[in-house]
Image (cartoon, rainbow, N blue to C red; front, side, top):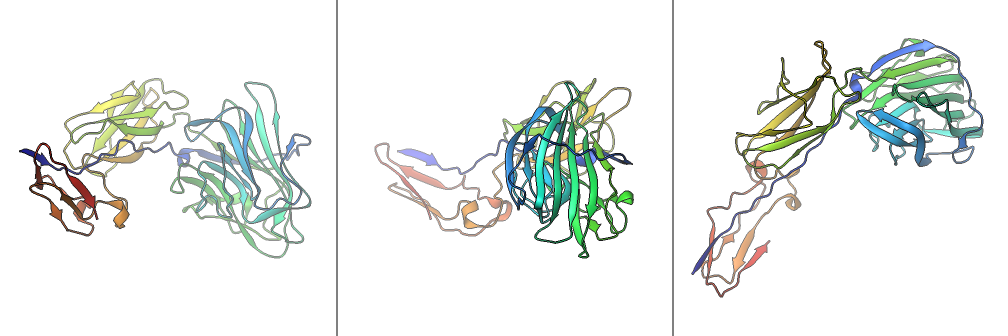
Length: 378
């Protein structure tokens, strides 16, 4: 007689996070607004909530640790790096699109003389992509005429938002302005209720800048976001996961740090206070881990001379069974039975158990060698 021991388990093999736009530096200046002419016009004069996907940047642009050659535009005052974008009036705080740059995000549409366009200028390696909103307004509002641009710079990977002439009607509006990274938890935005020339860093992802007849950006006001010279790496992944080991890997930071990287991991969710383990590789094997334990990992770049990026993380992995993401019955194995054996399982325990899984290693089903078994998940 053949004895079969039934064990139910699964392992996740990949978790990922990216670098953080919150580490970008911010500055501003009063310059000159130079309207672009020609270029590529997107949609029609009165665009409303329209998306324009997968436009060519014209060069490789690094944003949030990832290199892009395409961008997408939404008429509501923001762009996304990459091939797709989803319309939103609150793109930084609750929109569905990550890795965005917002110049004046709200419920906008073009006026009868409106135009949304983009243009590539300059020569490599110093080209500039300019995306321009001309004569835009709050949806269906009269008396508004908002002009502004988003600029991406080759090589430096700097982002500019430049404001032109603004006319605002008597209705007060709020607009989201700034950057969003790999999620709405990673943001670098601006806030003001009284003066666009004296904005402060947003304390929350839904911080905004107010527009009234008296509170508008002056023409030429330029907001600049500059990536850190020693940037943290992105694209962290854990693979080859077992109950006692894992392999972590990541993408090289841009620019590539001269000395390499440091990583730190712990079963306690407390950020490192000192140095981590140094490496020049983009992957490391972790051994001697404790089974059925959540681990937290941080990584930073070592740019030499005692200069380090901020720690990126934590990202987590679990050395054991998969952990369901909710208490819904579709997220875990519930009741199960077998039939056809000489000794069958009748496990009628239901409900979400502690840890999100059931250890069934002690449950035995037996069958003769020529017999067959049927496992039923109820």
